[in-house]
Image 1 (cartoon, one colour):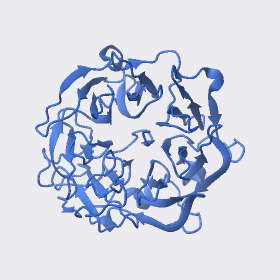
Image 2: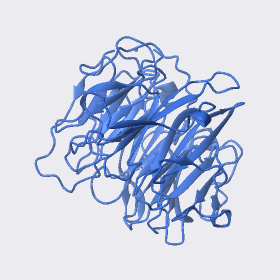
Image 3: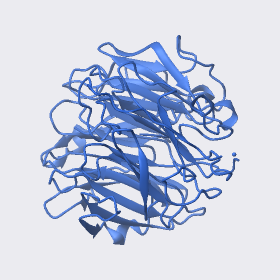
Length: 457
């Protein structure tokens, strides 16, 4: 099962200013609690790690050059002392910090070189060698290689047991028409020299008309090959998503069975039938659609289900500018083997909240749904206008107890500094005891107007 996330559109004004960043990297534990999925564990200690993008942060003296903070998981969750700050001004990271580059704008991760440690791929706005893969290891992340991409996704697309890398070199259109994307699947393993086993173009005739921003992966049709959904700018001020299903001949675009929403996307198994399901956000409509997977791919339209804040059990009410579905994350919070869903609602009351809906054998349900914001008891901070709490969400088991924890950001907290909150998962759902909140200042990174947390992985 692929535990997944997605987030809000890239509506980021990269215009803020600030220094070279350094590592504070913990050594891996000699006796890990229990092995975490390799796609989430950078230092091999058995606990999932959280990568936080701050694309507006200053690095190397260049404003909005961007950086990433990696928070290492452990038996007690995250600590601001167990982390690494990574930018293109960091020793061993290729390239140079460039004003406005937005390093950390998009993230993906997984064991690309097959050494048993997850690697981190950091995207940016630069089309030429704009991404960097940073290698995992016993002491954490270090070193890296430049990649010809602005964004990426990692998954086993051909079912050979090795992680592959989908690279997207996309434009950032400022007008009506997309600049277009060049996409390539790099077959794993990826050597540390930056050379993959093979390269295959992905759908050039179609993607030349789409500026790819992000997406997700999972096995919708149960063939043990990963499927791929992409989000991006599709022209005339609109955003959309595109689904590719795996097959023995490679990924093929679904043309008539998938409504491409304008919000986030995520893939996970919310009904426990061993087929991953596709969740698509329609933020202008304040809804999330669930399209259930099957051996034939997505089920027919009669099997789809729509969820809003008017769905019975879901906190709040459907309102025009809430942006319900701007961010979506999928993971098993309750530990029952069925994925639950976190939905970002960054426009709620002009402040933002996160709604958590539960998966069940009957599918996603509003029964037992929860809502969290900065005005929730025991959640640090105070809700303020335009914080956009829930602009990005992520579910992953940071403390290794079998329950996915909720990470959520507010990218415009403190007038654009940004911050991230982590709430623990439990058998009863998300709980607020021992809640953690941190921003760039707490991890020793440049924080002024950094949009800390704009990307989470």
